[in-house]
Each structure stands twice: as C-alpha cells, then as structure tokens.
Image (cartoon, rainbow, N blue to C red):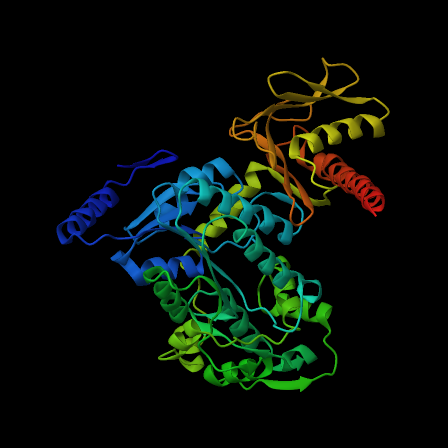
Length: 506
C-alpha cells in the first residue's frame, strides 16, 4: 500500500516497485532529484514521466484517483491535490527539489465555471508559487508560449497575455524560475497534432485567412523533453528561453505539409482578412475541439511567433526532430491522429464533475491602493448591506465567522468560517462555506476567498466548490446570474474608489 498524508491509494505493486528503486539508488549513492509535476497526467507531463523514467523521482499532483489507476509509469508518486487550494498544494509539494508547472486552466474543473481562463490561471499560478516557496522548492520550471518581441502585454492576444502574466506571478517570489516558451507542440496524443490532422482530413478545400500567413515555429514533444532534461540537470538555465525544433513556417505551410504527409490533397484559397470569429467556428467544428479551447488559441495566431536566439535553443536545435518526423510520429497507420492515452479517463472525470454539481466563480476586480485582504472583505460585506437596503446583513464574530443573513441573524443565507490558513495573511482571506439557506452542505466544503496582487493592482474574489441548495436548473438562471451581476457591480464600486484615490494623490 502506498500512503501519503494527503491521499491514500491501494496499489501494493507500486509500493514494491518504488522500494526497489530506492534500494538501487542507495546502493549507487547517486542523489536523485525529486521533481513535482503540476499537470502530470497531461500531454507534456505524461511524456516527461515516460521518457525520463527512473532518472528522476516523480511526484504527480492530481485531483483524481482515476489518474493513478490509468498510469502505467509505476515510478510516479501520486498525491491528491486541488490546485485551487493553497494548503493542499503546499502539502503535495513537500519533499520535492524542483517543481514543474504545466497547468493551463482551459479545461473545466466544475460543472459551472464563471470567469475566464486568464483569471483562473492567475489564481492557480499564485497558489503554486506561494506553496512552492513554503514547501522549500529550490527551483520552478514553467512551460509557457512564445511571445512576440515587438508587442507589449496590452497588444497581446488574451491567451499570450495570460501566459506572460503567469510568468510574472511565478517570478514574484524568491524562488529561481526557468521559463520555457514554446509554440505548437507536436506528438502522439497532443491537442495541436489532433487539431491540425482533423482539419486536414475533414476540409478538402480550405479557406485560409490572413493569419495563416503569419510565422510559427513548432517543436516535437521529444525535444520538449530534452529541453526539460537539460534544465533539470543544470542550474544554469534561469530566466526565459524560447525553444523550438522545427524551422520557422507560416501556418499555411504547416497545413499543406501536413496534408502531403497523410496523402490528402488539400486545396487552399487565401483571403485578405483575418476573420477571427469565423476561424474560431470552423477550427472548432472541423478540428473536433471544444470552443473554450480553440478560441484563445486562434486569437494568438494573429501574431508572428518564432523563437529568439539563446544558448538553450542552440542546444535543442542541434539534433532536433524534423517536422515530418513529428507528424509521422503523431499518426496511426491510416494517417489519423493518435489519441491521448488518458482520454477515456478524462471523459470519466468530466462526467463525475457534471454529477457533483459544484460551482467555481472567479472575478478580477480593481484594487484600491494597497488595501489588505481583510479590509476588502469587510468592505464587500458592508457594500452588500447597503445595496440591499439592509435586507442582507453581515454578522461578524470574534472567532472569524462571517454570515450573510436575511434581515435577522437567525436567518443566514450563507455561513462562512475563516480558514486556519489565512487568519494572519495580508494578501489572502479565505472562508469555508459551512451552511445557510442557499448552501447544500457537502464534504469538502466550498470556499470563498479574497486575494490581492498589490504590484499588479488586482483584486481577485473566488468561489470554489460551492454546491447550491436550489435545484440546478433554478440556480443556473437565478442565483448564479445574480452572483456575477453583484460582483461586477462591486468591481465598478471599487473602480470609483480607486479613481478618487488617484485624483487625491495628484
């Protein structure tokens, strides 16, 4: 039986295998680095664990036991962890030397998610780097996206701006960070290869907008693994590094070369407009990819994305895998894209998430000056009372309890208790949602938190794992909409306060 503080899985054969590995390492007296992987069951995370095998001790962070059951790599120490929970991430990272961050929040983790991927990514990255610092992680490696050199964050697509923002958050603490910036990653089971091959197979005549004449520089998954291995072996690579393995090509050339590889005669018609909205539609439809994944990616295609020279890029390009070999390795004997090995279990997780009927709602709001989190929490509760003309009142107690009540203290709509992990934190205030007329009590309980990013002038309010008492259909057309409207109104209220403070300071 394999046991860890945060989770227990019953797999005796895994424990035996890991014991043998430990004995071998002790016998050889070679210290082996322990590497924690956030995103361990994804395309890149799976490739890392399978390709580098026993070279490192792998700690996989996962939300689901089904991931463990599906894993064929017995060397991975799986630890149960909700990446939106700071204390859980901190616990899961304990004992690791290096942490690799491969997380992008475009996949839904709740039945209802209110908020865009950029705000979710901001919160996840802050959780991870804070937890890594507290857990004693020596270095963090992040796989992001290529950034155009000629544009600042205000002109980037939302997708690339989010990647850049994650880099900023990860670099905001005291841990050395390595950022690897890559374009399209091709390999068996990868979403980029599947999307590309599905388009080639299903569109014999392809209308190519102006963005298909922009430059991109892709890379094989095996070269991603090589780059990661170089960074794990050496502490020399600190900072940001563009990586690529294929020659720079236009998206049009990528599509046509892929068509030749799978022996599909793809005819193309170029048009002078970007047609981003139409592109999103046909890429999602014919690429068999959900719109919430396609839309931010297509938005990024209006940029020219090529790798800028650096020492790590030179090392990767020497012996890199060709574009044709990458495509060949991504298809089966009939020329169809190979599926991701975890696909069946992801569908199972999606159905489970649907059945649980939980809610995640994250809003990014303006931060007035440098106000701490506990002040903003009280301000929010007082503002709720004011806009409801006293119908909804807050009740604070000395032990950190906060209730939102309907007229009288005895009729609590939502009961919240301060978590033990945020009572003295200036930048974070978190509550467990423990009861009330609008709440269905479940384990683990939902959470409400306020978190501030003072250097960025951002306040984030987040509702995690909330389960409504109302029937789902009624909740989705009433309470869910009201919550978003209220939070946006609170954001406008904070914006007016910030504007007044700025005016006074002049």
